[in-house]
Length: 351
Ligand code: TXA
Ligand code: MG
Image (cartoon, rainbow, N blue to C red; front, side):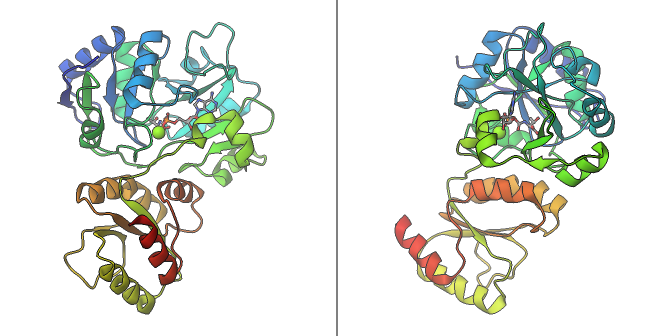
């Protein structure tokens, strides 16, 4: 169904905007979709217990039908209406990290009405750490199924304008609460068995989780992830341009000849990172080399450079220690260039 999309701005601290929240809550209660800011990325929200809303989310995003959705709730108590806490891990983690960028996968409760788990027998739950998202959940009185509010496969949206680029006339309302603070999606942690496993890395890392639990937390092996969290096997986060990761060990001399080489190739290129550019006309976005700052700017950088219609995005490596950023970047990149010859080969293949 084609709808006319409204964008309503609300203060990021969750104050004011009464009419906008009322309208958003009314639409959600009617089974329609509302995009809203979270601290990670914008979400495309719909009533998690209503078939037509959940189906609309899949249709609007062009999302593969076996990729389950995260259910957003306002409290740990509300989460326990949907999932079963097997032991004390749930309460420990919810007390420490909620509201925040952590999604917990629990066994589905027998009475659970949500229809987002795609037959997995589990449910992914999160209390978002954004006042606008929390107020929207509370005012709607619902639990909100919400994937990232982008077309499937594209970089996730971290501003309302990004959402509008992908979903104008596919969603009834976008609540604009400003840019997202974290910039990459939540950590997904499986608590549905006695082994705590990360299915998708995020800004809350394995060591913080392990420290809190007082037991090991591992990053699930890719085969296990494919079974438990089917969504991770699909293409993700890819801009239209090809993305090439610049290795950290590439020094200024090699970087300089690298730029000459790509200039000679005739390809339109853009750059995201901290290096000096010989040609001031090349579109560039600064991406700082700390985990928080890189994550905050990452999807925005990919989308901004795509808007400049470049064919190739050269991007600095994120900090080596960030499993989450390497996960997102390696999915966004089609190939990794480690030297000029590789880059030339890749460019030749692209032509
Ligand atoms: O930060 C986030 O998590 C954002 C904001 C909007 O909350 N949402 C988000 O949703 O990233 P989405 O749909 O793009 O990613 C959901 C991830 C997928 O990797 C999916 O496979 C996993 O969560 N997931 C959902 N339900 C699951 C389940 N029952 N078991 C395992 N993984 C699940
Ligand atoms: Mg997504």
